[in-house]
Image: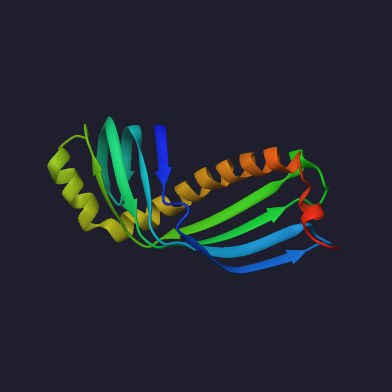
Length: 151
């Protein structure tokens, strides 16, 4: 995807946070209640055994997404910061323009939305993991994570 747009990431609730100063690890769980992805895409492959081929614009509304995150900075070095994010998207609705058999494909994707959500959850987890890591590495150079907690 390119020209990616994410919205609704502010609609969340942190459900648990733990910090282990000896490991330099922050762990947490949070819920994204509703968020939106749009962007230009090129695809050739399968999702939920639905053959997909084409390019165009994708717009997707994602429902409740349960997330687990682990941030590790045990060397107090911004470049060695590790981020792991696991996401479980409950459901979605979406529309792809420019896809082969556009109307039928969109109907299939939306009718199998729970299965599609399960298949794309790890992909979006890795994408957001990368975004969070980049943001934290930039922020880390200004304030060390260990400085945020009394050890």
